Image 1 (tube, helix red, strand yellow):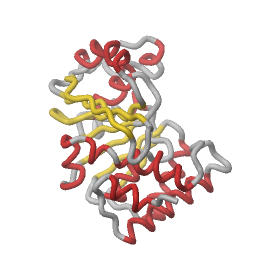
Image 2: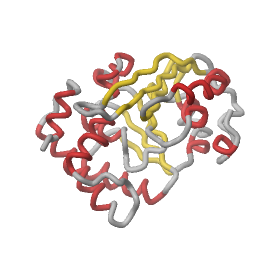
Image 3: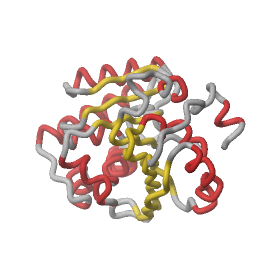
Amino acid sequence: MKDLSFYSEQLGISLTEEQLSQFEKYMNMVVEKNKVMNLTAITEPEDFYLKHFADSLSVVSATEKAAPIREKSVSLIDVGTGAGFPAIPLKIAFPQIKLTLLDSLNKRVGFLNDVIDTLQLSDTTAIHARAEEGARKAELRDSFDFVVSRAVASMNVLTEYCLPYAKPNGLFIAYKSGEIKDELTEAKNAIKLLGGKLEDIISFNLADSDIERSFVIIRKVSATPKRFPRKPGTAKKDPL
């Protein structure tokens, strides 16, 4: 069986024994909590290593634009984090990250706080809020070097959720599956309207697999107008 060390080596990431232990504890916590709360359909270790851990970490090997995540004490928010992907794997691998986890379900936030405590993750905060609500908080808006999301939503919706959190010149990186050309065409207007510029699209196969993945990288080049994001639910019902 391929273990996490195998996949991390494929990604050019060196993990200590302590970090590998943190990953194992985290996986076990997710799988155990999954018995009473819907967190993931992926519970077999090898699949978990690949589709959750390697997938989460792949951003730092797929694009040089994410290099500061490896090297510096950057601020990062994961919008709609769910069980903590991709942000908690990134935090374990690169503990200097100043991390904020945002999720709309209070039970998930409770679980994330248990993970933070158990793994003793410093500079890590879990916040209960919908994306649209969190982006209205002064302490969160325009505050982060990196905004990431692996949430299942179209790019025009995700951009409205996420770009308001980015600092001027900060990056929003969306984790996407497979072909995204049509989705990006539909999101062109939203990206511009929200103060973003499409900087890169990285398509690749997940480490040692034929699973297709893409990163959409949007730079915040001007302030997001104050009217965005719109009230909860609007972006999904009436995309920009």
